[in-house]
Length: 232
Image 1: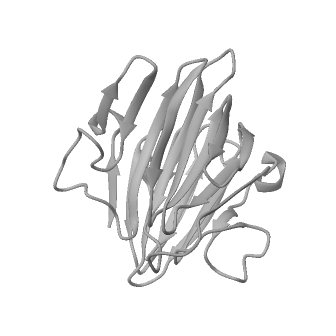
Image 2: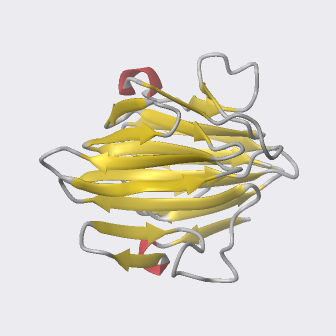
């Protein structure tokens, strides 16, 4: 199954400083048909106004991946970590037994992010945070693993879930394939550009839910940047 979810159909909340679209039920948006996709619990498409952001707040028992699409996000947490993650790069936080963190846009322009929450394979554990750059040139024309819960993905940021977060930048006409294992769940969003997934046209910022047990062919109709999560 390939279930395209148009951008206009997503949950929407405009708080002034934050303009958010929700691929799955979140906060004041509730759709019983979109409570998550396998272990993928949240996928928010957030636009954060300059010099604003999320003040300190708690999390626990969740793997939180932030993919920065434009601008930069500045992180602070109760573990003493601070860091600035800019466009194209990724940060991950394992909330574990509990952590407080804040995410600010201290830039003079709007920051746009995908924030993705994945349920961990086990609850508890010490919280952790990490970030690293992933040059777009390294994922030109191919899917590259950015975050992973599998030991063989040594170059990726570690998460405590049976999941991978992948991304690719594709020139118009380029194609990549991804096999979704039986019993797994994949969710794909083009950050920019129009793509086709097994012949289904997908516009920028639409979501695509993919059942397990299939290989999908992803073709860029425009220059495109795609993010894909493959999880239990």
